[in-house]
Image (cartoon, rainbow, N blue to C red; front, side, top):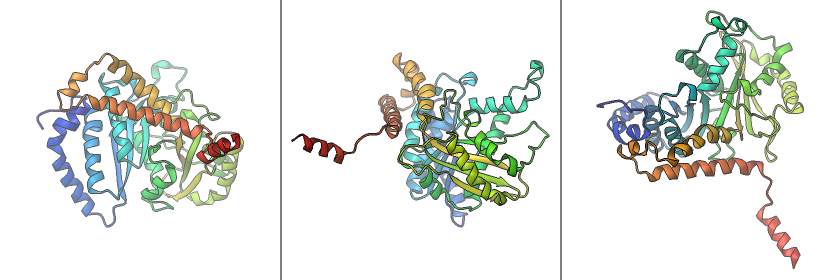
Length: 367
């Protein structure tokens, strides 16, 4: 390629990416052919960059054609406004989510802003009284937290415990479009050079499940999270570590504790019961991780992406940079409309509506 992607979805997707896709596809095919039984693809990328969004969606599009029956799990990193690398990030993110709706079965939203908050809270816990000693997270710190989070929530699939990628997709997505999920892991990483203390599950299992349900430990920044109003469609926990299976009995009491104390609220039509997997790992510190499909994700998309997109597109700012790289301007309107429908889809699962049969009965009674 003659240059980089310039933080531009169109440049990555329609221009420079076209020169790369054949080589990428050949490498991908070689990797798949080397597998005995490929379950699917775990796709890690940024939502907001020319490469992660533009080239990334080009790769996903090719995977959807060549490996139509394989599951695709996306791990999508949302940009942090305070670390914003380009004014085009809202445009790129909106276009990227539009493509993800059709090309992934489950998509985990990982937020640089939230992981920066978690890093500061965990690593500076003993230094809060001395601001000069507090650490600002570097990108490798954020990447470390992201990798650990992904490792924990995919452990049940990677180690063949109860579910494959296909089963995960089926369990976590009651509707095909509503497949964007949030994760949490507790305890989190300790300061460099120190290992997280092993949990005494007999005493702490309830507290660790509870901490996973707190908004401050989510992988997505959601300052107005309300456990009473933000409803779950599906929730799954992994308990991973040395002799984790011993605490299966305590997990039932922990789940009851979460429901009784409103840490988990459910839409009315779901089973109201989280899935729990236990994964033995002798060399791994004991952790509890959670994956939840919750309606609050629609507010994240609105506040962090569509609201900023609307402000830019109202002035047609930077639109020419996309058009000159081969994208039709109408794709902006199509993507914005699609995210508007997505937000409505999330609102609909919260709204109790009479079905058509009930409406017909009411009409008949009037006569």
